[in-house]
Length: 218
Image (cartoon, rainbow, N blue to C red; front, side, top):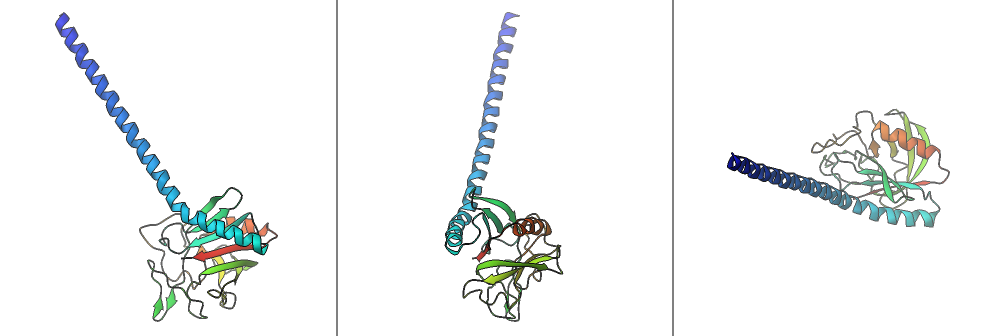
């Protein structure tokens, strides 16, 4: 009887030990996944943080708003967040959103995967460069609000004449749709985002006295 009890005790100890090892392995694996995701997120923000530093230097030099700016990275997949409202004070991305790029026309047409850029009037393409966000006005799209954009570089100098404005479009999702791309035709060159983000931006823009920078880069 004592032998049976001893054997059972040994098996029980082994089982408990194995369970602890398995649990420890699972915990370590979960910690590794979390750490990896954090590292990926950190890497994803590196380019944005670098652009934000450049943007702040520009805003300080030109007397623009130094609380926040809008950064749009056209190198990012159109089904992923690529519009960033960046808070200069906390040095962090305040909000992320999807953003459509210009569809183009004729022989110069963008695809969801590959945007083409132009400053030419009538091109229906996105123009790269820094913009000053201007006056608030009525839009027939989205939340019925748009903001005029004034191109500050040779690459986007025709923005105002082209009626390139910041606005929303109701069909633009407020969450990422990757691996799907945003459909073509939702933008004729304007940075077009979702209604929720535009509402959020509208509140911020209405309450600022200094000009706000919007920067589209690739």
